[in-house]
Image 1 (cartoon, rainbow, N blue to C red):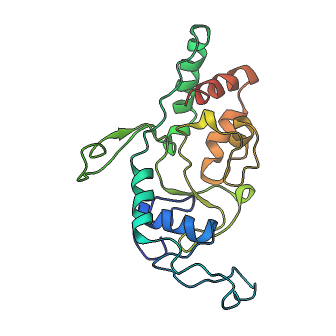
Image 2 (image 1 turned 180 degrees about the vertical axis):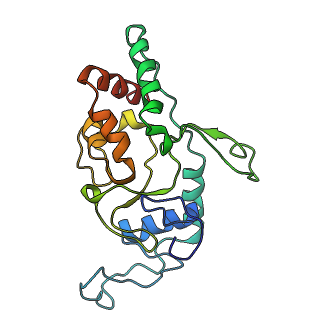
Image 3 (image 1 turned 90 degrees about the horizontal axis):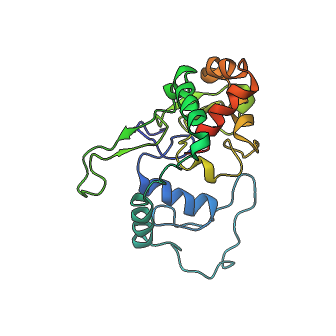
Amino acid sequence: NGAGAVARFGRKADHATLLDFVEAAFRLEMGLTTPSHPVESSAGAAPEVPPGSDPAAEPEVSLEVLHAVADFVRFLAPPAPAVPAPESRADVEAGRALFDSLGCSVCHVRTLRAGPAPVAAISGKSVALYSDLLLHDMGPELSGTCAPGAGVQEWRTEPLLGLRYRKTFLHDGRAGRVLDAVLLHGGEARRARDRFAALDRVTQEKLIRFLDTL
C-alpha cells in the first residue's frame, strides 16, 4: 500500500490488516468517525462540517466495536461450491478445465493457504478463494479511481468464491452478466480474455457454468 506495507484487503489492495479495512469502511462508506480519525470532515471540495451540527460524541465508532466487526468478518466461513445437477456435470468439468487452459487461474488462483495464526480455526487453512490478492493492470476499459499505491487501471484480483450469489460484476457493477465481465478484462488479462472471446458460444457457456458453481 501507500505506506509500504504488504496489503491485500480492498479492491485496490490498500489495507494491510482487516482492522484497517473495517475502519476505512466505517469512515469512508458510512461517514462515521473512528479512534484514528475522530474529527468530522467532508469529502473533496465540500465545506467543512459546521461546529455543533453533529451531537454524537466522537469517535462515533469505538475501538471495541471495530475489533468486534473485524473478528466477525475474519471468522465468516467461505461459501461451499454448488453441486451441479447430474446432467450439467460434464459441462461444469469442461469449464473447470477451460478456466486453467485459458489462463484465468494465473490470477484467479484456485486456493490460497493462510499463514500461522493464534486461532486454530484459521491457522494454516486453505481457502478456495480464486484470487492471488495482488494488483494487476486491467487496461483502460476498467479505469476507475486511484489509491495511494495503485493507479486507475490497477485492481486487486477479485475473489470468485460466492460468485453465484452476485447480481452485478466488476468494481463498479457495470456488468450484469459474468460473460460481460469476462469480456471487459484487459491489460494483463487481455490474452486470457482474447482466448475466451475466440471460443464458440457453446464452449464459452461451459466456462460460465463452472463459474456459476462458485
